[in-house]
Length: 334
Image (cartoon, rainbow, N blue to C red):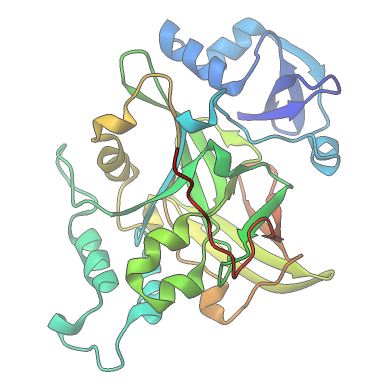
């Protein structure tokens, strides 16, 4: 089962359930967020809840996508209560990509390994603990709140002061926190963890700055467990031509951490178990066009797809000109 959200002609939101190629509105569902909270409160799983509500009119998701009516597959009525976060160096090929950005020319000995490679090795050794206890914690970063969520098909705005605007094809876990402070996983979705890789390469301590960018996820949430072996493709199109097309892998068979370990180290903080909050937590990637020498340009279209995750995720790169590069933000005293 896949869940998505579209905007009706009157501006209201419709929750859409899809099995196979057939998609229908879910009767009486005002949002995926509320549907998830209702499931958590009643102890009923999503499929059962939707079956009880029943299905309404058929929906042409492709047309909704083309006409700009496809929304992010979950939102919070107060964007400040949706958290965009992620982990890095979690995939078996991710260390080589990151290390190439940060390594010293003669870094061969153990003591000269980059922090990226050390972190990756820690994950290999204890990212999938055999017992019930937690394993080693991963790299973690913050991307913003719901104000940074970009709908599928909409533009990813790169600030004018950015040095790069590059894609990161990932799988994201989608969560709500129930009334008792327990994280409840809604499902998994494709995600573009859009970042500034030139800034990050300049100095690894700029990683936090490089991640404060918009992100897009969806268009659909896959309900159920994440497959162990996820195989997808990441593409960039420019002026009608495909300038980058490379497979990306995810799922635990291709990761140095288990999903359970990544979830534990995110939700172990009380801050991230506040009732009613939404979390979109991205699990990392090993595929970057930046690592292959691609430099993105305004108007480039990113496309991320993977079998079993529904419609591909597409967004265009646009420069946000609301702040001039040479300008300075002024803070005014009260």
